Length: 185
Image 1 (cartoon, one colour):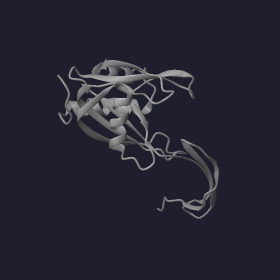
Image 2: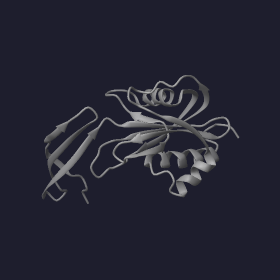
Image 3: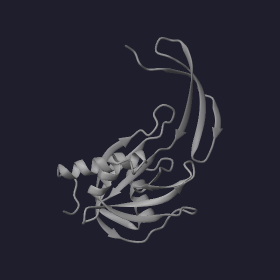
Image 4: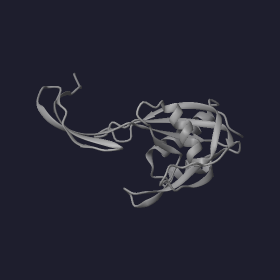
């Protein structure tokens, strides 16, 4: 069975600094017409910095759409044409004041595939060295270290609502268990 839909016409209804919004004319696999609303986004990166003591370094920041402070692993958007690895290393240092000598890509995450084309690239980072935080203008963060095992419990107990952070914590825990990525103990 054919599953692909065909784009007939792309219609931009909003073009912004972070996202573009389209309302497209498309066709289902059987040829019947449909409308698709799409949010275009350059994508992002999320990094799980693991200390020698098996702690993850998190940031807390206010997230306007939710009206609350959210606990997340360091993350940010990709600049147009920026390699995801470079963005990850930049975000790690800007948000936490750390650089790492070891990195491992743990795949990608599609946060909202029903209407948004954003892809988040996931990394583990270890052998950390402290530098200086350099957050973006208007970015206010608090840094917090949480033991990896406790972070897994927090995911399982529903205490961390951010999807990319949940996925990355669980992947890092399993990769560490398998001996694929480093860190302390």
